[in-house]
Length: 70
Image (cartoon, rainbow, N blue to C red; front, side, top):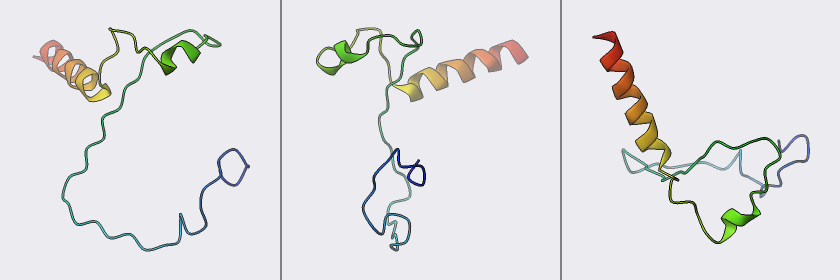
């Protein structure tokens, strides 16, 4: 995306050394499914109640998958 000019990142983003001291890094991420071209500007201020963390949904899907393979 950077090479194609879609994303502007600071100089050194890909070349500066990185030191990781923690064994685990967790970032809470939300996602939702919607129609292509839907107006997402309404999400700027008020998030829908049915929006859940992606990790929660992934764990739920994995549990259902394990149930079907048993």
